[in-house]
Image (cartoon, rainbow, N blue to C red):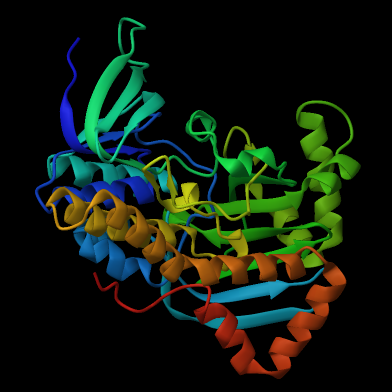
Length: 393
């Protein structure tokens, strides 16, 4: 059986995986990237590129492509409580609204142009090995005429497969042992203009984000506690979701007003259950975790894509040091874990703390009144859920 050898294998072709692949290939590393779907494809995501993303994408050589994609510009964030209390603030720079279909495909194309072996419609079924001995990945391609698995060898494996999945089960990750009480939904709409702004509207037990994308469509992405969904979603199948969404619109007048004037353009909602807003280990079985696989920030922080891009570049830098012999396996594990905690640990904790307020209407209304009265506090919360400083490696 043919077993190609790569220096780095990356599982997952979203912003985290592609940014790691691009940064590694730019250093001359032989990289293979496995993506379970084919490009372009949609993803459940807020599709909000926070202000630091422009510099990160420029570092990856994507600036000309981003200009061509013409993402919508976002400069203002607005939060509302169910009782109508509202807080608005300017972001610390210009953010973008861009569909994951467009972003992920552009990143993968850039990776392929640099020599990355991009294998679409390919699932990684299992991983064995270590940093000392190298790894062997069992992969299966949906496009293959046969169902036989292919074994691929690599010195380093980077897992960028998202929030949770089969690879987490294969690696026996601890966070899977704890049930997670959140579900998320996303669809694209045509509705009233949202000029230069992203809006987050809270309802009891959840919140819903609205922002425009390239081409004028709007992304509607919401998070809800499972107990609220079960209590408010009557019926079966699509009727359950319709019943819940109808209830949600009655809980926040501003959100309800926008949705009653909007029309869904996607055939169906994307959904995910058990979204894991818990601590995760950045290195598991010598496999490096990056993006949501390493830690999922609360969506209200709006920094998921920024963290994914930044984390991918960070992963590539440490991986290159290991591959060149400048770090031992033990040093590699230790330094990468320390890097990840230093870069993202504090903002993940702050995001979880802020989300607790968003899920409780009474607390949220009081919190918004306070940040309206003390503007520096609001600016602190915005700036400390993202990192505008250049990434120094």
